Length: 435
Ligand code: NAD
Ligand code: USQ
Image 1 (cartoon, rainbow, N blue to C red):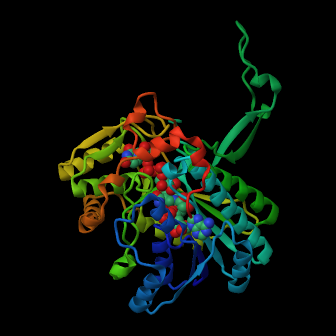
Image 2: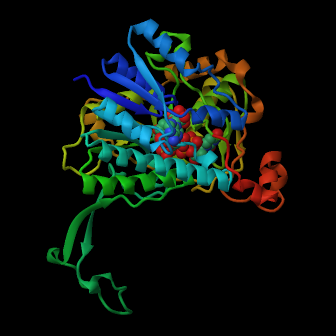
């Protein structure tokens, strides 16, 4: 069934191909964005490896290729509340998809200004969207792009469930006491326990990931109090660049981030291999993460749009990922395909050096997702794009420049000059970044 969909953050890496995919499938699409990601490119003095076009050119190209109209509205969702409510009232969308957040963990850790910007932007955006849905008096389904990172990356020995954890809690006080010396613990009978489902205990690994945990709490409240239909997609690392739709015209090309802040690991390794730059493995490379190809990401979002939760059901949570890999294995694979060797860098992040990860993703599979698993053809496709635009790469931007903790004594000498300035003058970091 065709729907009217507002895509908040529709100029971004996942939002843009999603808007095109939904338009191609016959939905009426309106993109809202404040173009802050393009401003962050200016701040970081780095551009997408691919030459992304201004929004007007993008939309004109789409019209020429398909005859379909996508409209664009410039709104800062975190700040322009009245315009957001009016847009919802005027357009009466069936679905609002929420991509409009600052999404890079390293950028969110760059300085206190970047931490505050990320929290203000992301939390206010989410709160404003929910308040605007309430003020519109419409039954709008909200689909939010969350992250697998809310679960944390410590080895727990269970398959990570889709949002909710089933637990049993002893009801008798004695059951929670530590056994005292030489005393046997009395086994607890079934009647001494209650079963419940709780949100999986969050364990964010950066200020960015922390905002997604705060989002989840905001969803829980407004869903329970105002009966808003909410789907939260806990997405893994998205890799790849183009989709069938972005390939229709050079002017539709998707963003490709490769820099130390916004570039994500697999796309970075592939881009580095394409230009012969030693692969940047942080620490041991034992970090295991969940991944999804951009083509599956847009497909999952379409499935979520088509399957809203019932009016009075709790927040519907999907794990939006198709496979897990550890960074070391990905680097080995890329090396074996290209001959470019790895360079183990001191990890700029505060994270477990090694972790296991098993994830449940049965809900999307049951709704028809056919996973696009990592394969040589797809890896080669990303490297081809990287080679094509290699002349646009600024080698200086590849190394990491954001640090989770102040570097150890002596290590500051290894820092880029900009990071040294911030550390030697913490007051400087209270200045807001430009947006
Ligand atoms: P992106 O930065 O490329 O796109 C986000 C878009 O939102 C940008 O165009 C930006 O200008 C816009 N935006 C930000 N704040 C806004 C505001 N206040 N008002 C209006 N527009 C605003 O990021 P992306 O990679 O496309 O990610 C989209 C969403 O998916 C994010 O919420 C992110 O957390 C989530 N996600 C991304 C990945 C990934 O690997 N890229 C993985 C998991 C989850
Ligand atoms: N890493 C390297 N080398 C690099 C870059 C990263 O070894 O050059 C390591 C990191 O230390 C980390 C892992 O690779 O252990 C993943 O890093 P990443 O930058 O690819 O991913 P992350 O920071 O987790 O963030 C990305 C998106 C974010 C999304 C998240 C999904 O930017 O928006 O929420 O992936 S998830 O990882 O499942 O939380």
